[in-house]
Length: 316
Image (cartoon, rainbow, N blue to C red; front, side, top):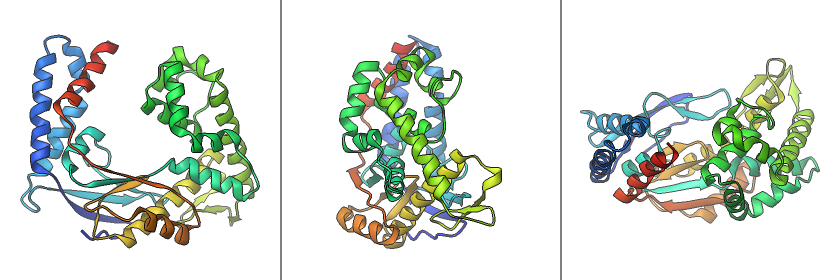
């Protein structure tokens, strides 16, 4: 599968028909099991149902049988986004069902790693971020245990902080993720306050020391934004996403026949690839030391689908 790197392009992604069909059957069985208990919770699950049905329908086309035709568009930062109903933004559990048997490659702590290396280049030491990058599992598990937050929510909160969502305000993306009853607890936590301070210091230093030409800030992909029309948070996002996009461009150039689907901080390949070689290539092409993780994609079992819906039932 050859992937072009223009402003927009189309890719044909083969799906695992038997795995996706099995997921659909298990999804329907699970919904039928629970729908009489709490139908309002099942209603909340409609995004999963709709995503599955749409992707299943798209894969039954007359152009490329058992494949999904995926359209990408390049953003102002150089990131590649899919348009319309797509696998990139589908719930992970459904994407796993559709692409079972392939390999998922992910950049460990992508944006925080890039931020930390940029900051180090300007002589900064970000103690809390350094600690997090070296001990991410232990930190997440500790927060999860102490605050009763799911690991997924913790990661979402940290990314929201990185991209400018403030601590100490209600009705923003962080309070929406954790609930207003947790905001005060997060604000008082040493780890979160330390991360907040490190992010602010890094953001101000990186932007203040970045080269501005004719009022424009250029990122690693050569994409420009007008400084006077953007905030420092937006400018930092532009720089971080530019590096991320350049890393993926490097991978696509190297493995264009193997990559099936681009994710924002990773990709899915139809074969197991040499991680060490890819990391060395990323360093050579981008000057960033980034660590890749990989896993074989497995189709979700019926018990996992049931557990996913059961978690909604417990919250209601």
